[in-house]
Image (tube, rainbow, N blue to C red; front, side, top):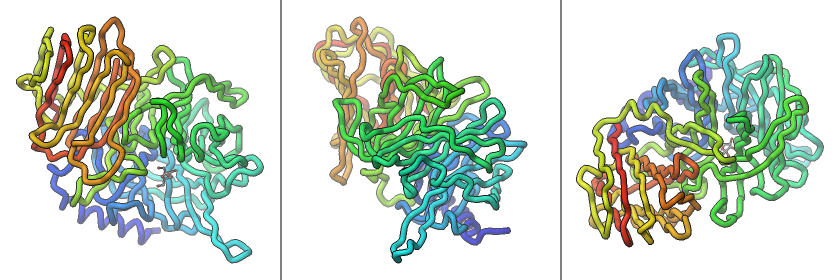
Length: 487
Ligand code: FRU
């Protein structure tokens, strides 16, 4: 049974994607083939390859009529575009095929997503309904189940919202399937519901794993739940957050809840909450587990409140560089996937270099790189690293050693919109030393401090010709610097 909407999307993306020149795209980040992309969906292993789906509107550079786009990769760096996987073509999902997860079952790839529909209420008004649906496929083509929707909001505790119930993330554990789903409790704020199933079609409500209670934003979207280094992590993306110190910022944010999990009772015990990323453009992360035991996280590199994308381009949406997660000293840490190293090109290295005043280093220049800096700042009262710089533009990464604060500022990066440009995070300086790793791609900067203790991801839209890197030091810094180009 063919779907006219899906056929149309597949035909459109096939014809239009080839018209976008490769030089317009990032080099090592996954970008939408054409049109608009938001959340990563169904990030999972299927037949030994990593699959990634995403919220997708092929027809324009704005959010509309959600489909699922589809890519796969063997190394998290080079992505192969596959035909769009799902279109909003059934009564239960005609208002959108929203976010969800994927899992392998009996050789098939099963997608679980939120079907959004609009119903007529008895009083003549319209209302939105969000329910969870499945589609079964072979890695390319998917058939929506006759049983859809397979989880409805009526299964939630009394008083839960019927309209905000979305983004199932699914996994298999001890022969059972589980899914976490975001929803709104009777108090109007977020909660994460856990469901279980033997066959992915008949689902039972298990528990509410955690609740916002109006503390961290409102609705909790896009949950993920997994064990990591003796801890249990609950990731979720709250809407309507309010800034708290340097930890959380206003608007849509992401929180990582670290705790323990009692599997028998389906109870999560939260111990601490932190930002998995302090940057300007990071949302809706999802993870997968690799065969070699790593937990890899990818996120949408954008903020809902700031729709930045290169003007005039027909694609709007990128994912972050996938990251390996760990828990260290009670913190959720993230570093770029090691596979990135297989794509290194040139290498430039400085050992024991003294940075003083304003200076540039030969060979430390470019817009696509992995730059590692081991810095001794004990004799320094302020350090600025200006990247993507020319006579007119620059993006500033600055360190205030005394207060242990790292700040990213893209005010002078060439933006034409009046959007948030600056964000700071607390970092640790141990015995005068700090380690920074900066991933630059054509439109982004991802900063990892102290092997991923703190991470900061942001978009920059500076012309590609601005490729200088300038150090500006008050006092002096002893530095070991390694730069790798990336292909
Ligand atoms: C998060 C989100 C999800 C929803 C999707 C719709 O960015 O709002 O909750 O499923 O986007 O595209």
